[in-house]
Amino acid sequence: MHFGQHLAHLRQLWQSSHALVAIPLVLIVAIILADIHSPESVQLGPLLVVAPAITASFGGYRLTGLIGALAVGAQVLLAVLQGGVATTNHISQIVALTILSVFAMIVCFVRDRRTAELAQVRSVSEAAQRALLRPLPDRLGPLYIASSYLAAEKEACIGGDLYAVARTGERTRVIVGDVRGKGLAAIGEAATLLGSFREAAHHHATLPALAEALDRGVCRYLAEFPEADGEAQEHFITALLLEIPDHSPVSRVVHCGHPPPLLIRRGHVKPVTSSHPAPPLGMSGLGPETYDTHTFSFHAGDTLLLYTDGVMEARDSSRAFYPLQERVAQWANSSSKTLVQRLEQDLLAHANGALGDDAAVLAIQRTPVPRTSLHISALAHGADLHTG
Image (cartoon, rainbow, N blue to C red; front, side, top):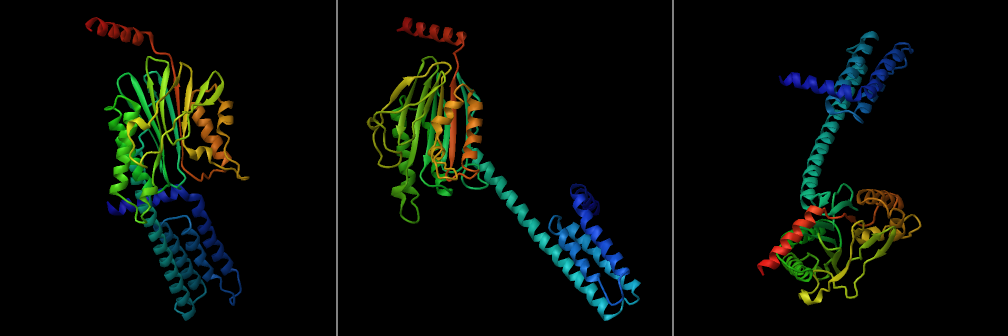
C-alpha cells in the first residue's frame, strides 16, 4: 500500500508538470546521442548532471531522484558503449553524478518541507485573522453592507485596521478604527477593541457611554501589556462609532480622532464632520461627557462610506495622495458592493499595488423599511402608550 501511494504521488507529479519533465528527458537523450556521435576524445557524459539540476527547479525530491537515476543510468550506458565501465574515468563520472543527484534530492526535500511548514503557518494565521475580523453580513435590517480590507503586510489578511457591526434591538451599531502602528502589536490592540465593542455595544444605551467603555478597555490593555521599548503611552486607536436606527431617517456618529465618513446622496458626496471630535481611544481614559454625538439625516437610498487613513494616504508614483472624495463621486450611483469593489481596484491601481498602510473600507446603503415592519413597530409603540 505504501509503495502504491508513492506510485500515485509520482503519477500526480507527472500529470501536473509533464510538460516541464520533458525538458530533462530530452536533454538526457540529446546528450547520449551527441556523445555517441562525438570523437572518442570528447566526452559529453558529465553534462548529464544538468537533467537533475533542472528538475530540482520545478519538481519535488521524488521526481528529482527519478530524473537523477535516469541520468546515472545514461552515464552507465555511455560507459558500456565506450567499452570501459570499470575505467577510473567512467567510475568517477558515475560516482560524481550520483552524488550530485542525491544532493539535488536533499535540496528539494528541505525546500518542500519548509514550503509545507510555511503553508501550514499561513493557514493557521489566516484562520486566526479571519476569526478576529469576521466577515460582515450583506444585509442587516434595512442596511446593505459591503466591506474591503487591504493589509499593507505581505501575506497578511488584516493588520491594525478594524471594523465590526452589532445588531441591538431595532438599530445597528458600527465601529471603524485604526490602531497606531502595524504588525503583531497592532493586531493585539485591534483584537482587544473588537472584543470590547461586540460585548459593550449591547449594554450601553448611548454612543458616548459606549465610547467611554471602549476607551477604558483600551487603556487597560495598554497598561497590562506595555511595549518592550517603553512607548506604550504613545499607543492609541482612532475610531468612529456609528448608530443607525431602523425606523428613523437619521444616524448618529461619535468621532474619536478618526477621518469623517462620506455621505453619498442623490449623486453628491460630502463628509460628515463633527464640531467637537474627541481624542482617540486609549489616550487618557476620558468620561462619557467628552464624546459628542453628531446626528445627521440618513434616508433610504443614501450611502455612508467609512474608511481608514490608509485609503487617503495611499500615494501614486508621483507621491500624490489618493483623491478619495473625487473618486467616490464618480461611482455615487452605484450599489454599496459595486462601490467598494471599484474603490478597491482604483486604490490599488493608484498605489501601484503596494499600500504603505493598511486600508479598510465599509459602505452602508440604506433601503426603505418594509411596510410590515413599520406596521408592527407602530402597533408596538401604540401598545406601549396604551399600557402607559
